[in-house]
Image (tube, one colour):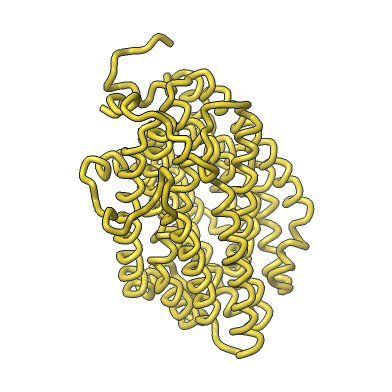
Length: 469
């Protein structure tokens, strides 16, 4: 029982220094905004990785290469989502022990999740490189763009270890309340990525593979910066190479809270792969439009992601310290902020859709389909924000099984059933676009009922005696 550790270790002022942030004290709203803002900016720069590839590839290599880079982004997400979701479990465990003041368990969690990240990265590389052609065939990738798509994704997956370790390091730092350093490291690596893209494509006139190589080099650089920070002596998180190993009890706890998130991410990604494969059957213009819209939507979702990460850390730390009312305050604020920002951005996406799509590709057919999809989904971003916000709250409270079940049933089963039905009845591409807002609405209703009626704040208390509500 994790409660046994709560009072065994006092908070160390030296260990906490300036590298971590205790979110159990102070104004919860300003703390969450202060924590979410660097995450938001870091997410912007992370989006620049693939967006820079798409913009520069589209400009220098043309529509076929753009379709190769953008048409199978869901493939990347499918392969990395399980490992990245499981790393969320590590963040919850580390946040909770940090909030409880148990430095020994924080250290064990950090070293165990690094071991997990190394193993995940090696598996990701092996599977991605070996099976990329198979996955692309399954997704009905246009034969005209298949060679460049295989080339791009194989080089991308060669950087699987860097991709995995960066996300693990970021999860560790965010769990300890430090969202600034991941931002600084991402700014550096994103700018490096853009420079390398321009160097390889515009100056050396290399193929689409070089855009993936630029991303791999940039991610590796960010990992070096992260590890240099984590290896610093005298902190609660200080990493020692000899301690990086799987601690069975800690790994079990990380998997307990992280596995549902990993499964959730994977089933969402799987459903999106089904959608993508149906889109691909409409040809390369539809592929380029769908992939381009996904890039723009990625930016639109950033406020949701930022407040979700902030609320998960805030709630984990405060439930670790048993500050239940404070956790509820943070939950309400994160839902409101994410929904408001998402809807404002959705309105902007609706209004400026033609210009935004045109940034990537001036082909009239691509713009027409991209705008159509944007104007189908954009005004419903508030529903997406609500669903993701409650899911993040559940994860922070140790209830990751709940969003897994909701996402599996609604965003996977119902979404796929809708797509198959529509394709059999109509085969109209515009109806495929409606799969997203419809399933966002259904999941939002379920999450609202759960959020209002369940006792989620006592998610970590089942091993101890019942608490008063």
